[in-house]
Image 1 (cartoon, rainbow, N blue to C red):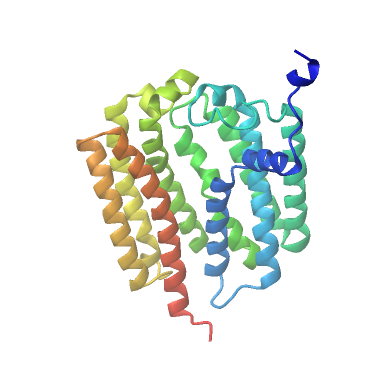
Image 2: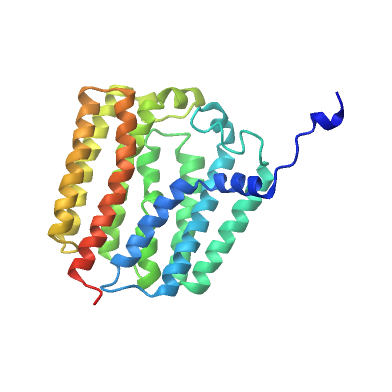
Length: 303
């Protein structure tokens, strides 16, 4: 057999772009950006200024993608052991560690520069803090060492609406903090639903996720308890006057479905149910923030 037949052909430009895009976890980043953009539009009565919105959207997306790439870099050994993540570019050898680091630094640097020059320094610093919170504090410190990793580390994942709010106002108000609290309370039941049906993967990788360290029954109960906490938190926009009846009706309906899922997880668990709950939780957050936006513009018409 010739040496030519043993050599893997170099990937084309499109294939290489797909590999680096996969490092940035575009599906996760899209939800981050969505929540940040909602924060931008909720921050002002009418339409926010176009240039900060566009620049902040791109800048936040780039920094979030860089944080995701660092997460892939740090966890490449763990990713190789888990069915959900073993197809990522690093475990498959499609990109190297040095390429991943260079990609993350370049993309993140461009994103931060964009935020500093075209948005405002506060947004840039808050976004940098979010990057450090996820890529370093959560990924390196919390995730491999404590079953409360997703509770504590959820603070970085809850930052997008604050970033969006700061981008168009130059400040962080109590309404922005309410949006933060909603995502912060949403994160544990969302992620623990995933951890329940992926518990064997996490055990094999040696990660102290709650189902691994405290068992399935304990985790199922906490999915329900945190869903009830989330329901209470989602009523804060109405209690403070940030939102009105349209949002209230949507929140109660969405919360009711989430509680029903969480109750069934506690009382009649199956992996299929946990998987459905995880998928619903993503839809839930998207619809909840969309309801906030709809309510906002019904109270503050663009005309």
